Structures are given as structure tokens and as C-alpha cells.
Image (cartoon, one colour):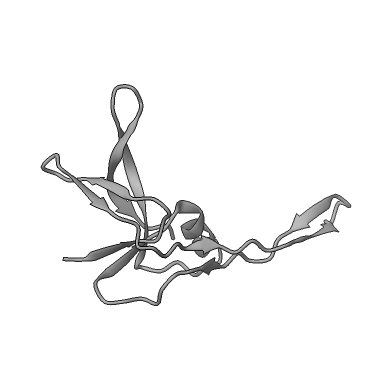
Length: 113
């Protein structure tokens, strides 16, 4: 059975096939994207464009056998964009809402590659 480590700042409610909810508490560690300062440079057409250096995640542990790290989507997207997606880094997917639109939880995980 895999282990899921929540590297987001909030607990995650995961809806199970039997209708129950399993909460994955925060781990106490949060994986974020570093805020890098960019610079403005003119592009080929003379339009000034903000050039940002690659954003790197901070707080992401090294891979462990049987462990998946749940991160917020911007972290996973930045990793994929940089060509550094990992098999053990996932995001929640398929939010389930009640009739009022309130989120009840998510029904699964996804990798962003």
C-alpha cells in the first residue's frame, strides 16, 4: 500500500470508492516554488518582456520507495516545465462538490509531466 505525504499547507480529503472520506493531514513540511526575480529585456520585435529564471521547488524530499508526495499544482507544473517531473510527485484531481458547489474532496491523484 503506497504512502501519501501531503506537502501542501492544508489537509486533503480524499473520497474513497465506498463513499467514505480519508483525510491526509499536512506533513508539517510545505513544498513551494522559489520566487525568482526576473529582468526585462527586449524580444526580437523590440517588445520588453519579463524573463524569469527557472522556478525550482523547495521543500521536496528525495524519492522514497512506496511514497508519493502530494504538492500543489503550480509546483508540479513548474517541475514538468523544467523537465524535472518525478514519478513520485502527484497533485489531487477530480474535485467532488455538493449541490451548493462546496468541495467535498478529491477522488484521485494525477502526475503532471
